[in-house]
Length: 197
Image (cartoon, rainbow, N blue to C red; front, side, top):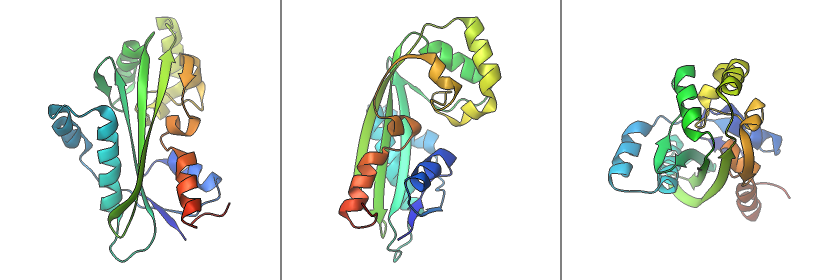
């Protein structure tokens, strides 16, 4: 059975395909800023925000009567009580990385699987990411080498590339950091006979 991914993320699609799964890409349009503001005003923790956004994306991409599993994902980055979004440009990435430098932040990755518009499974995992206290010279060299690709990442880094040089310690699952808790998802799919062991 084909899985539907309610995301335009090439990294998430690649993870699923590399795991041997057939994936249809069906990006869901969601006003993330409005939802984040609303949930922040309610005092919601960042992991709940990620889970809410993942579920909403899944529901938006679902088609009643389609028996495919629809996968919604989202990520939230929190550090010292502040939430971080994908930077708008390199200047914003520079500011964000200076704020995270020398600190530990939490990266919450949520996944919701639905069928026929209803939730059948959800999961949230958190990674603890400690950035080195790197110099401004290193930061400028990093930004020049990484380029605009980091603007698609909530942390202004891609761990699978030069972004790994920013860190002194990482605690958490690699796939969770990339934006999709893949191993728990595969367990769920195997249990539901949608993926072969």
